[in-house]
Length: 289
Ligand SMILES: *Cc1c(COP(=O)(O)O)cnc(C)c1O
Image (cartoon, rainbow, N blue to C red):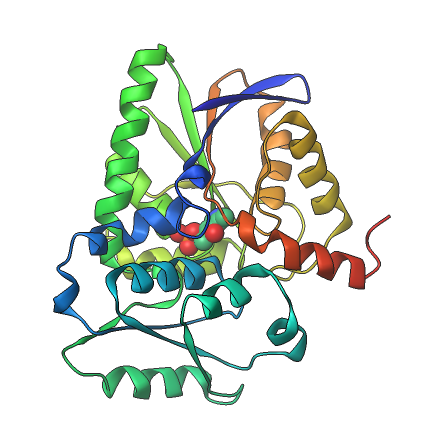
């Protein structure tokens, strides 16, 4: 837990990004339950998603650790990604990741076929680790936060974490006491997309995290001059965040927290390793001033 003073206000940051360079943040939490499995239980990990995904890199690290093969399905690997000498794809490939390119057409159908063709020694994990297996590790995180809140003597604590699949935010809500508010910002889609994701993992009457609407609609991972500015501001304040999820989330937080004096804990979910290639995208799009 680390204090962070920015825009004249004190925040707290849970430094889950420091767990491991490749296998950190909420990806570590979501895959944590698998670490304890005997390595002989599986021979191969199989998943799918984006070519620069943080989940992909963590799964590659986990597979390496267990001595499992790792098969990862993507739509296509752009040449710039294949040739980049840094970032998540390069690191995951160096860890032994095998990639299969399924093409843009009928991608999800093909993933379904791949999944159905797997054997008993293959472990399939949905995109981004959006799976009930993630609950155990996120529950541990919730326990650490609850203990810290008591020890630090915070009366009103809000916990915030950005949402991709929303898995982390949902399981935090499930395992934090109800007096701790859980906030999240949808980064991959909008609030509707996030609610649809939660319906897949949540029970009908379960309390959900509160969604902070970021006021801009913006395509996932597309460089945005405001995001770069906020990322730099946070780095200057003392902590390097990821360039994809964190800036949009902090942007919404700055608006919300001008109005309140509640204590706020930001769960740093890692993803720093992908900053190198994302910064290159900023330069290529000439958004860098
Ligand atoms: C994956 C990721 C998220 C989103 O986590 P979900 O559980 O999919 O909502 C947020 N921040 C960072 C840095 C991530 O890598």
